[in-house]
Image (cartoon, rainbow, N blue to C red; front, side, top):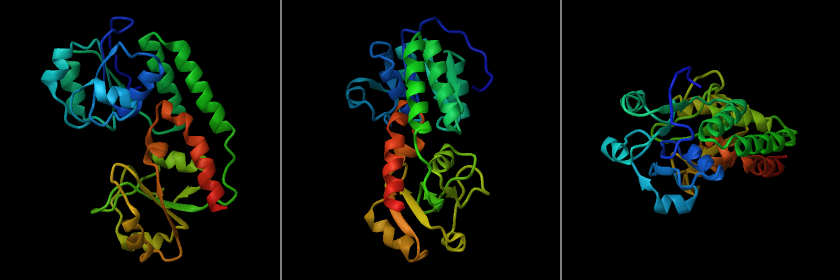
Amino acid sequence: MMGREMEINFPPKRIVSLVPSQTELLYDLGLDEEVVGITKFCLHPESWFRSKKRIGGTKQVHYEEIAALQPDLILANKEENTQEIVDKLSAQFPVWVSNITSLQESLEMITEVGKITGTEEKAIAIANEIRGKFDALAKASRPLRVAYFIWRNPWMSVGADTFISHMIAEIGWGNVFADKVRYPEISLEELAHANPDLVLLSSEPYPFKEKHIAEIQSVVPNAKILLVDGEMFSWYGSRLKYAPAYFKQLTADRQ
């Protein structure tokens, strides 16, 4: 997806995943024996989180532990992993890097991972299931103006070129910070000026709680503030199967 060339032993027998949402995809593709290493953020499935070798996080990995696993395929992501990690690991092992900002790109990733792991039929079935569920998702009847926050101190939102912003659009809502890119820092004064109808506080990467709602409510008193499941907005692997039903409930509550 990055236009890089790589050679792998096909199908790979020792896979390391540096991306939580892609780790879950590997599980749904039935690659239990093949996956030998995951990150400490790969929470799904829980059985893998408890049993698989954890090789660090997404931004800081333990290179020696990865080398000891002798992977014949490493899955990475442009946004979640650093260029340094990809370059250093690529010098020794095949590293496949995804680059995802939209639902369509996530479906392409799922299919491509299936191709390179010898599970293409299962991958296509998963991608088709996700596509079908999103096609059946009715857009919200009210196109609410939404501010989505991923971090606090500093407050950070999402720009138009992010997967989260695309998920907001899939619901039928609009991102009030669509004029920005990536993950901009937003002052509370900017939030007040944007005057959103709805503010979504994500469960990850910052663990927003009920106590943070009042802090935002004082800035935008007319907005509705909700805590939301960040995985439904930001995980772009097979977890997308569950996102349309979650979004449907969100929109039903906001009509």
